[in-house]
Length: 321
Length: 254
Ligand SMILES: Cc1cc2nc3c(=O)[nH]c(=O)nc-3n(C[C@H](O)[C@H](O)[C@H](O)COP(=O)(O)OP(=O)(O)OC[C@H]3O[C@@H](n4cnc5c(N)ncnc54)[C@H](O)[C@@H]3O)c2cc1C
Ligand SMILES: Nc1ncnc2c1ncn2[C@@H]1O[C@H](COP(=O)(O)O)[C@@H](O)[C@H]1O
Image (cartoon, rainbow over all chains, first blue to last red; front, side, top):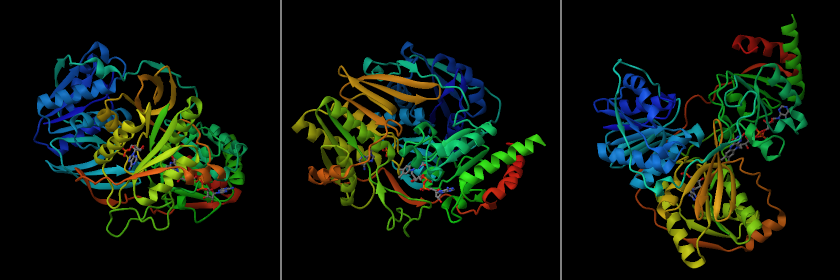
């Protein structure tokens, strides 16, 4: 039996959790697939989950489970896994999924394979997982009583099939005060207006080639013209030219725009790990040998301080005519 | 205030990852090494906390003899001393790493008293297991918050801010506690020359733990497909602008 932690917003499961269900189902097509949802409104997901192969949706309700309490979530997941005899326990490779599964793995003293894209076997298992934020893959052998996995978002396709709803089993978990020490007590700093880097359709970034804070003027103008967001490389944040919230990459923001324009950025693997989800990449670089030219779709060879203003002017001209 | 921060030595891979012939590791002959940016922020935070409150900051790594470079880097920006769990050969998995770190923490605390705060990166740059810090916290029975962009210590507590889609979630944990942090927490200082010289004289305690059998055993590494396509060059300099506009139009973003 496989058990998947399904993250949801008011009973609407998120895509990454449906992808986790798909991988768990593929791993053992013959076995029963159950889901765990935290919060009473999880019951509303029964139809969707049924279409994604779930037999029973276990909905855990407890007055302490309003704010995110990761140790409590892990406790509930472990209790249910032990009670149901699940041999595969999975979650999305989201921030929360990875966090709850790590805490569950620590409780069970079992290994945990995070950000898995493929799995096979039935104990031991063979898994392929993501390293270096996606720049490298690892094939590994997982030797455990229970396979604990998180599934890399966007690596597996979730397909709805059939039309029966999952049956809903409500329960009140046992929690003690120790499970509730770590608990989100407050939400601060509502997001500021404007296009967010993570959701922008177009991102225009610059790297060390920008030369200074002022060197971003053209990039800002181009981003504004295209209704996009400004990004940057780590070389830029380390120099203090832009805040870290603008950084694209493995340790910055991961983006998936329709177009990524990277100016004066060499294309280090850790930078590309953040923009590999882009549908198209245009590089502007003075060095025709820059590594980014072997991951970009289009390139302009030249000084960004000349090329970017010329692009802005050409856009205005095209729009005027 | 006693703070411990755990860092891992990883290669700086540049533009392209090349594997060793047996596909067990990254070919590092021509590469430099660093700790993850998350961990560098952890070091900076530990140093600042101790600068503000007095006490001692300690940096720990589990890795080969050369990993002493990353310990010296941390001491160059102000960590007071280091613990080196020297491990040659095969990489350690997260479970084994956490167990060795727990042993080292218990041994150090038996001698010097408890660490108020133990800091980790949210995830290591290479393995990306998202778990060593949480495993250590569980074994020590200490509360832990993850992925933090702000940490403030006072009144026997640590106030933590974690970035979430709608803003920041706040966690207030009693000390002693464990935190895992992300780049953006602070802007780490560059080591000064005197800092580097002082770091050479700071103490490094070396322990050689034995690697247990791995229950998540790496079989081989694979470079994913999709690298090595050559970009279509639209032109040179300002003259390329009209061609760029045509592409923007084709992509539907104009
Ligand atoms: C664990 C780890 C995590 C990391 N995480 C990230 C991350 O999240 N994001 C990130 O970006 N980096 C990250 N890095 C750093 C990364 O390895 C690179 O050092 C960094 O991306 C380099 O930034 P850059 O391309 O701007 O600078 P450089 O590598 O110095 O490249 C500058 C480029 O600009 C070009 N250029 C110079 N002048 C001009 C000009 N006038 N016009 C046009 N082109 C010009 C040059 O030809 C060159 O290609 C990480 C590193 C490590 C080890
Ligand atoms: N070999 C190691 N030595 C010291 N600290 C480590 C080591 N491996 C992982 N860590 C710490 O644990 C964090 C999470 O690692 P991981 O679980 O591999 O993603 C890292 O950011 C480091 O702070």
